[in-house]
Amino acid sequence: MNLEFSPEEIAFRDEVRAFIEANYPPQLKGKGLREDLSKEEFLAWHKVLGKKGWSAPAWPVEYGGTGWTATQRYIWLEENARAETIPPLPFSVAMVGPVIYTFGTPEQKKRFLPGILSGEEWWCQGYSEPGAGSDLASVKTKAVRDGDFYIVNGQKTWTTLGQHADWGFFLCRTDPSAKPQEGISFLLIDMKSPGVSVRPIKLLDGGHEVNDVFLDNVKVPVDQRVYEENKGWTCAKFLLAHERAGIAGVARSKRNVEKLKQIAKAELSDDGVPLLEDESFRRKLAELEIDLSALEMTELRVLAREHAGKGPGPESSLLKIKGTEVQQRLTELTLEAVGNYAQPYARDFPKDGANAYPIGPDYAHGAAPIYFNWRKASIYGGSNEIQRNIIAKMVLGL
Image (cartoon, rainbow, N blue to C red; front, side, top):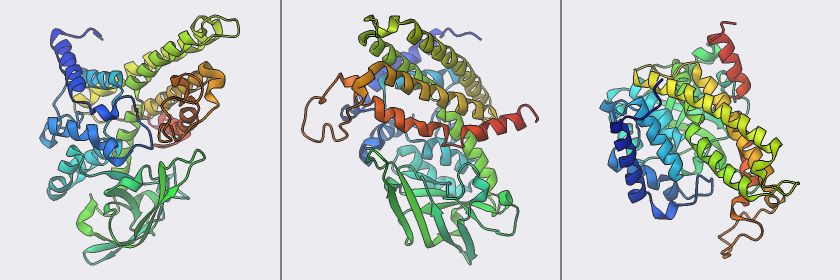
């Protein structure tokens, strides 16, 4: 594999870098991806990319994709990580969008794809339920046909940022008598419909990132069902493969390794030397970088397959497992590096009017909240234990 960029690819990298520097919203610089951003802040960069035609690089050109090569997409991810941009949220561009352009009707594509590309419509995911998380085939939310409508009743949970959503994609049971995977349909539901209520799940740190969504006799037009009735499991699996491939986040993990090294240069070990010179810490950091390099090669192979017209397969489960493990180890090492400075937590900063963190260096402020929040990474998108089962079955044939 030739890892050297060609002159054309270097020119493309320079173009991307210049575009980001000139167009990234100034009010977002230094904020990073946090759950307490406003809806407008989450969407600001997405809307800039939509106008440029760069919001969905992985999509086919005929539906609004860029037509970039696998290497150009890799460069795009690297440059966004370098600038620490807030990426378009995955629920629209990386998840429901590919389902709609793959399985949707011409009318559905015309209706929904433009709003996804532009960032004008926010989507949320209605998969998990109180009794159905990684085991999605156990969903109990019902959709009963009534003429040209479905009447939907049920509850979804852990709906990330659903409080901002305009639309949601939901797995609903349309044939209770069928086998678990065979009686499910994939419905697009307007979150402003009568009977839809979104209730916050308050986290231990006081944050509002996830929600319960209740559906009480919600009328959903039949033409908002994607693909055939009772065949929604096909859409669900397709969507999850795209979600898992995107969870790996290699470029942003590489950027976070660079930041961790800067912290380790500034912080001292118990022996009074910079932490980066401490043998034990250096070993853990080196092991992490080795795993991240291997993960990067796997991601490049997946990008090359997608460019060749082959969607993500079981390797998306491998990307999900190793990507989230690397992310969690990064937060653990960062927490270790900042030490006692991680203990104070000023959630309302800078909203409380202060212009400096109350104690410790700036880089220590978010170490503990990020560490605890990223425990979720090995669970969402299908728990890592489930992903190992998928690999055992689809790759090893066990």
